Length: 124
Image 1 (cartoon, rainbow, N blue to C red):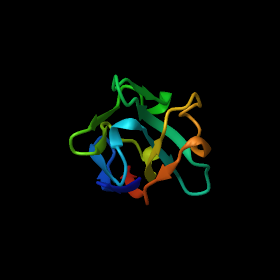
Image 2: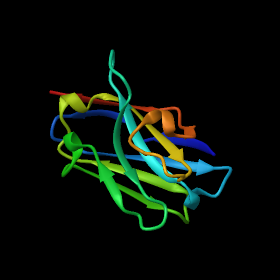
Image 3: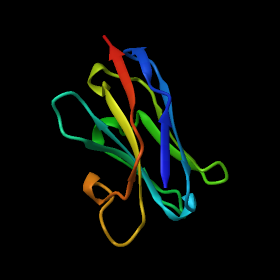
Image 4: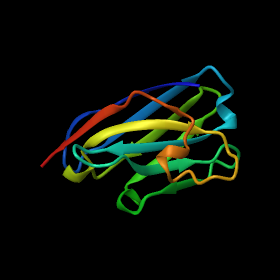
């Protein structure tokens, strides 16, 4: 699977962004899709994931209530809508895909494929 993320940019605190990630190469609908982020000097951390069949989402606590992950299997695209952005949301955001096989989707090292990342900068 090849993943292409986009939608990052510079936004003021309290603003919104929608990140997109387009997949190609394999059957997108077979994969759990995740978003991770990595701030300067920090490890890559889980942000959100969405199941392949049910579309059930899951979020890390810092973004819960402010972000929505969704997917459009017909368009091979996963989205991350982020609202009420805070300076601490500043990071490079990565989309990733994992084929479900009984492993946790919270951990970056479990993912099979990664996009190139898109930078989100939130100014105070």
